[in-house]
Amino acid sequence: MAESKHEKPGITKYADHDVIVVPNRLKKKALRRAAMNEPDPLTDAERALDELSAQFGSWMEDEFRELEEARQSVHQQGLTDVTRQALFRTAHDLKGHGTTFGYPMVADVADSLCRVIEHTADAARIPLTFIDQCVDAIRAIIREHDIENAEEVAAELARELRVLTEELLGIDPNPDDPVDIGPPLAPV
Amino acid sequence: MAGPILGIIAAMVRIDFNRLRFLVIEDNAHMRRILRTLLYGFGTREVYEAEDGAAGLEAFVHYVPDIVITDWAMPIFDGMELTQMIRQPGANANPYVPIIMLTGHSEKRRVISARDAGVTEFLAKPISAKSLYQRILNIVINPRPFIKSKNYFGPDRRRNTNVNYTGPERRKSNAEIIEQHPLLEKMKA
Image 1 (cartoon, rainbow over the protein chains, first blue to last red):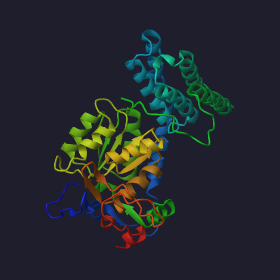
Image 2 (cartoon, chains in turn green, purple):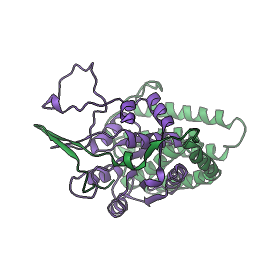
Image 3 (cartoon, each protein chain N blue to C red):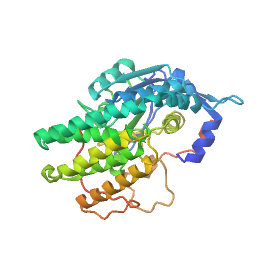
């Protein structure tokens, strides 16, 4: 949608700001009426994603390996800015990708770990045992993913770690009422 | 945009994705693969990729994409900083480019930060074909005007004019509130 020589944005000036109406080139370029009985545009994309999903198990293991490496670095070097950010970044990836890859409870546990790392101002106060519990729980959930009743066990594990997270952060556990628990430490 | 209305619109129209050029900026190779798969599944032919904010900015200048999809947390500089660099009037070929911010951060304050950096649409992980398609459809059908002020350059952060709003008017003039036509009317136009 590069600016065209022929279609300049319309600018209206006001006391403290301008309002700029940009010509909608994308609509002219790419939007059309659907033909009669035209297939749903999502079908092919969902089918392609479904075919890709055969690889999600190994992708999850790849991402867990990075989390494990980050945990090892924390054990070897302590919770420095570098190791803390690496741990946060890998946990945050698992939080974001777990559900997409079919491992929603991994996402849930990773969320607990992210919250404690992010909202504990003094890194020295983050218990290493809690980090270990979360990482071990994620490993177990991935390993036992295909076993019968694994989902229930994973959900219980995730719930317990969520409660522990709330205790560590000193807030009332109430999953229906999420609260803002302080200034963020933006991830790098 | 209200979900049901978008659903009605989606059934009435199609986007020719083969006419759109995308730039995906995401440091995680797996997520890049998923995005690429979805975009190709929609019918896109041109998907360019970058692994970090710096490479993303370079690719943005080089390929001049129609739509940018960027992750938030990335090395070198992140998706927020990238957005701020793109939203520099006169500094590049298209400071108005639609930017979809893809992230695991879904907290309200994060959404507000992304909005204030000039992000067009916010897409929280986990993503699906439907959620990505809806964001792109909204961008194509329902673009918002841009606001340029001392402190902000980006899509109008007021998506709707609330007739029941009784608080103070923070802009210096009410006249600049652009009437947002109902989506169905926009489609007919």
